[in-house]
Image (cartoon, rainbow, N blue to C red; front, side):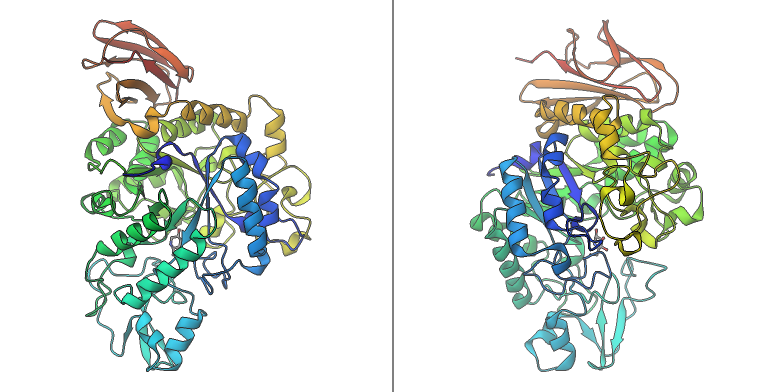
Length: 544
Ligand code: NOJ
């Protein structure tokens, strides 16, 4: 099974472009990120997921790669990247890179060669059709409303090329063994640096049938196994983290027998977690935990509240999604793609500190590894005047000086404007102010992350929901090798007392680990007194 370090990790998703600009050109860069490593180490996170930083026209925030072997010059140089890794390593931070091999940019030399010359070997790197078939069920564009089709005609090539994402992201034909060689070469290159793993962008789409003969990688999940075997041989312990937003019954296959992906983003839990937050009821989370498929021992779910895309609610029923919209995206301008919300966590929760703590406490205690999106630790807001998903990708708010301390460039040269009005403006929400305030969200986050790191059970154990006599209360027990924790969360906006049955897990005293909930033993269980949106984590005595 190898080194499963990722089970105890606390991951932080960061976009180099919007974190800190060191040279005043308005775009964040590696020296800027390096200058903030102490901040990240003090926050307590242990692993950084870097959003794509490769040379790119950046029409999809860098997910349109022009060159897999370099650093976008606006973001620095390979030497800057190495220096960043060195400094991150000194502070004990692991680094995971985004690996985008479902598609390239249309400016990538492979695609340029492919469109120019039908005889080029690069032609077969992509999926072409002179008369494209109508898209099969579930094969429409991922970006409805922004893209009309999955086939775009290229004049030069005299044929249509396939793309599930934007039209400037032609899809690679992963069924072609030469493409798989290219993927290994790219991995090999980056594994020559001390990185800890890759996030496989669009992993589920990489291996899907593109609707034409010869486009389904013959071995299906075998492609992921190939990449796993390659990474494991090249550097044991390399984590492969997959973005696979698939229905419940398809999810487990991405772990294989412990020989495909190490971690899979838990879109299933994320949908139900927001349904629970919207309805004030624990049931959606409890049901989801009960339904999650068994996964192999080395496998792990990667849990998140928000990533830096839309909050994708595709897994909910129409009625459930309507309920979440009603609470968190009442205005049409807050919604996107007919399935999601383009807002940050703090504004969705009305900036309510109690609800923010509740949400993060759930993230840190539910089975899996947590990932925090940059800026959420200080409760940053969104800018709905920006296009699409850029609303949640505004620059990091460091202090209350101009440009929020993100950059010294003139404001009109910033990659995106900083948030400078309303309750989430940088003069109200920023790192410096929160560092100085022991009661700030940032300082609460540090304490919560430290508590999580002191409880390896939370990352390694198996969750079991315990019966509670209040519909708003979720109680779950995590057991790892006989070491047990109980976490209770009140999703509701009223204080309550809930009795939780321990179901044979002992009624001895519980020792408080984190959170304000009060507890006492009663009969065969425990009684918890919880504030509105209250929570508490407790250690139970060890079993024999
Ligand atoms: C998922 C990424 O998170 C998203 O931002 C991007 O647009 C698509 N994959 C395509 O690469």
